Length: 154
Image 1 (cartoon, one colour):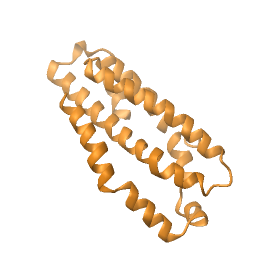
Image 2: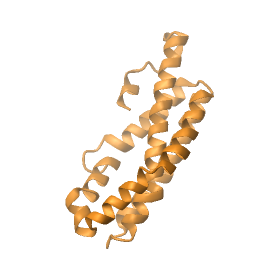
Image 3: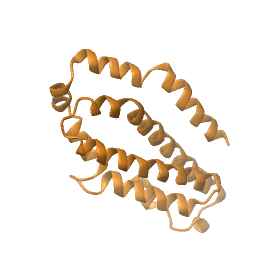
Image 4: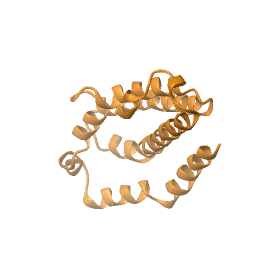
């Protein structure tokens, strides 16, 4: 995501081929993030909600995921419209959300709440294996990834 910070603010200095490559890169990144967060929403968050005493983390994650999904959708629209400056601007917003603060960003909060130690204190190994199989089931790969790969071709 931080690669977008190195792209010129205007696509006027890029050739059409370079613009297309950047749009392709941004689209792949947003599609990966969309699939990843959809998996969390559908499987991991319900699993954690049942096991966490403090629901503050889950409320924050749910709210942030709603913002992430809207932003990812906007990125997809910018890519479809071949609006590289807008796509870059939106990717930079995502970067700020994910990476800028070492303790309060999206990744840092998830890592704290979902470390092996935290997981093990709330679950059994069998439950984690069952969750893992659900997350990576053919259903996810076939429905979500095929859908997003179709979008790539548009």
